[in-house]
Image (cartoon, rainbow, N blue to C red; front, side):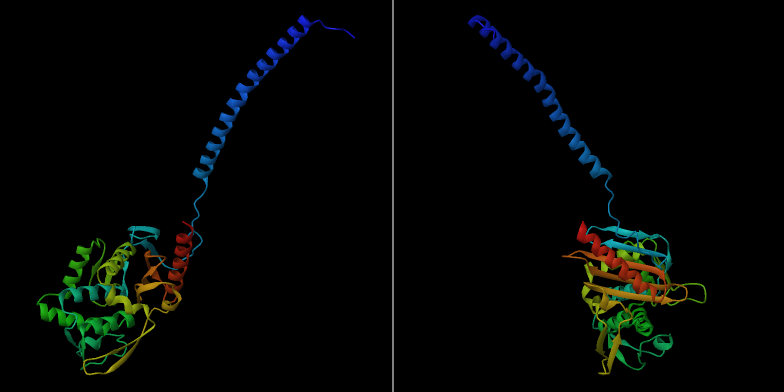
Length: 312
């Protein structure tokens, strides 16, 4: 065994110490850099994943029968879903929404409206009888829920006579005031004019704006449209039971208002507003669907909207 003298031991210990320190320093720098590089890489990777992670489209699997449709966030004033929303199409009885708004802005809600023979000569009156009288508000509710054409005709005739001006002109003026740029009305019912033309025309986007206006300005008048059945009386105390033409009214959670429309030229139309959460009113409009398909179209869009709001 070799015995080391003290000076040699000291030199060896000192040399080994320097070697250890040098080794530590040599290795420490790369580890620090690597740690920083790894953190940067991890952060960049997470950012890349967030940037490239696809947003779930809850509407992508929906197959609509409608030619045009929209889901409109009323509070944010923007669409969640849209399909041919700028295509101008016949509105059918969605027209009656504007009829009701115009009547309420040009007459008192307690105005007495006579039901004349001329009023009920149109088709689909929901049992309305000539020779009676109604308060304006009650007649408008009856028209909106049952889509009674005679009710809308009676309102338009009375308003034109009382105000000494054309009621349809007032409807179109109100449409411009609201901002419905692609909507115009030919009559107060939405019934087809002849074999080839609708009684009014508009876009799904315009109808979403119209229903949004209703919710903000006059929701009380339209609230009965969320009921399957209503009961009203004429001035003469004749009782009327009105059945909602919206067959899906009981299947839509949080429904606030609704209005149907159907003619040969228009196909099946339906517009609703429903609450998708805590004060999250959404307007859903479908145009150019089928008589039965419009109800399924709206229900599918409502379900997709609820999935969207629950996951955002």
